[in-house]
Amino acid sequence: MKNKKIISSILALSMLLLMAGCGAKKTETPQIDGYKLLWSDEFDGKEMDQSKWNYEPHEPGWTNNELQEYTTSTKNVFVRDGKLVLKAIKTQKDGKDYYTSGKVTGQNKTDFQYGKVVVSAKVPEGQGLWPAIWMMPKDESYYGQWPKCGEIDIMESLGNDTTTSYSTIHYGEPHAEKQGTIVKEGDERFSAKFHEYSVEWEPGEMRFYTDGELVLTVNDWFTAKEGEDEKPYPAPFNQPFFVQMNLAVGGDWPGNPDATTDFNKAEFEIDYVRVYQKPSYDTNVKKPEKTFAQADSTGNFIHNGDFKKKEKLDDDTDWKFLLFNGGVGAAEIKDGEIVITSSNCGTEEYSVQLVHPDLPMRKGHKYRVSFDIKADEARKCIVCVSAPNAGWIRYLPDTSIDLTTEFKKFTFEFEMKDKDDNNGRLEFNMGKHGDTATIHITNVRVEEI
Image (cartoon, rainbow, N blue to C red; front, side, top):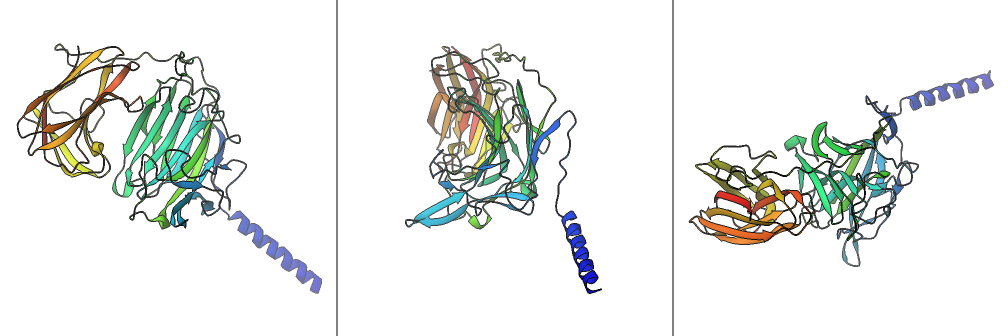
């Protein structure tokens, strides 16, 4: 009888353990119509699945002048409550601030060519924090080192402004890029909750989404070595890539941390990564022909340069008003002017910015930019013609102008010396220099001469 009781107790305990095991978190990855699941990670285990992910340690300053050391420590990379956590830690080394953080990659384990990547993540707040979900080629040397190899950035965010998320591709040489942004504020900002980021990567097109909302569509890219012909389209995005995720500290884009950065909360959380593929892809694709905007009957490439009609200033058509990095202001079209008011100039010249895109810039052609401008008080403004799709190079260099309380006409001429670009952009940058006086602009022209 005694032995039977022991056996009975063992059986009962086994049943309890089995039942407890059945209650463990096990996420069922959803299917998507038209796709098959290639691989996924729901982070249901107790530690990172090293059959899918690599640690990628690097010393500080390895790229972009970033400050962090990427480590293999489980203090920087760990799984908690069904989520992968990449944590930045501030310590001291040789009497100076020292930062460690986490980066993981799927290189040589989960590489794939073409598909739909879906990632749910929550980014941290804090000056100098820079989380990213991105993709690089399995063989970076196939077309040449960056940017010739290509790069697909599904999501990047800056810790000092988590209302904005960026989706970008990089390619070239020379370095070129295309970027889309999406803004969510308040309780919807990217540090306040988990958001779903995805890219549909196909042979001749990429489409980026945030929470199912289309952020960017791109189908025009190239790669070449300096002095050589471009590789056949759709190079460089016709080779296997892998997903990687990291939390950088500092660097050229976000700037360095400061006293406001709370490293107790410096965690980049990823809920899942899912990669799907269609049964087949048509690889017989051609590079689309560039469409160049035409000048109006007066030779002006600027639409509504005299501001005689109202228009939306928050879309991607014609004039657009933008705020970044602490800039606070507004723009309004009235009485044949556009009027820009600001209460905070922000930390960058582009923190308060008025732009007009889609300017046709052709190599070897000469152009003239002219406009009338004044301010309610004497102040400065920076003017340029930039290349959003070509690494933000300048066709018309950044030029500082002194504004007075009377309208003054400014005229600048330049020769386009780079590759043909159908998306030159006229910029008025009104941030950084302590100036917040209201600016008035009218009679804006960009014409070929």
